Length: 436
Image (cartoon, rainbow, N blue to C red; front, side, top):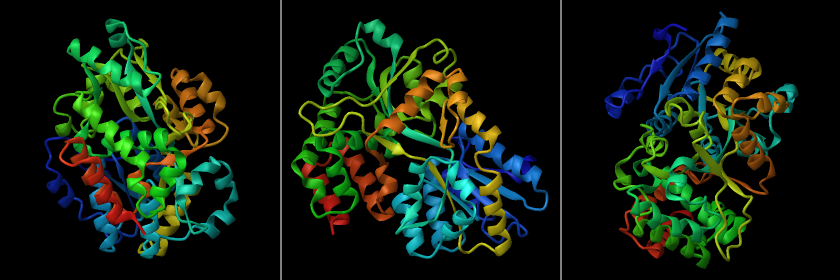
């Protein structure tokens, strides 16, 4: 694909976000000569797979072209909401489904795809059934599940653990006991890209689940009154602040961004012992960590239980899939192109192979032999088992909640981790925006 056809935004850290967003003003629904437009996240290796799927579709459909534009994660979340609100969304809207998708549906901004999936049952049948939950609003399907299943994983550096003579944690008490041992050796216990906010959120998601169980988490997602101030919730909020106070995270974590992969580098260079991050992190460390992954240096596990907690230790959180919606403001021609891309361009054989090569489990059924034959077979089987055996696979809170509630959540998480508000203040602030 010619570089002129693909717009790259936010790829270099030196490019200011404001400039990058301003540069994207030409990518709205009516600026591509009738062709479809598509925005998604950049950053390798995932960007290459997404771009490859678009390239393959464009080559196979010379009369139906898709122009793609890429963004860094945090910049994208801001840009896409602004564009949709202004009626200038791209034809194909990449996202995580859930509460954000619901707001688009309620505002009439995305197409109802229910009848299309009825007519294209073969497309639906080839995907993980569980992937459709976050694409469904009030019984109707509004997005095409795509890409890979992404549970949140507790990674650790095996070489650093060997150096200290430590074992991976089997409980929350083990985590707290490991903190002073690593700090004594000048190694940060946990890497964290805290400036990105959603990275901090993953800690709360697991602690709430492990301590209060899936029912407490569901009460929060459904906006039940005072759900955030339940005793188990306050316990979870208190525990994360205890970890901060014990210097459990790398110094300066609040100024480290996930988009830059600086948090990943801390782990594979041995400056941090552990990191809680998405399944996509495996591919990043495989691509950027030199011999770290091939040599067996990267360890991985599900988040351990908390003593006395009510949660099932097999539960997980993260992204059951990624999702593609179609803007209701797009032209009939653009919508047709998008639907043809869904039918013949999403998760075709070559794309599936690329996701697997990058250490991801694509949500297409029937890939077991490919997973087993991969050089990353151990991690892929681990991911597949977590996703398939979890009694509850909770969607990331910043996607499961409404955008307004999610923004309040992320802002208050920063304050919680910076110790500028108490657990009770955090709970009160969230109850005010999510409680019915």
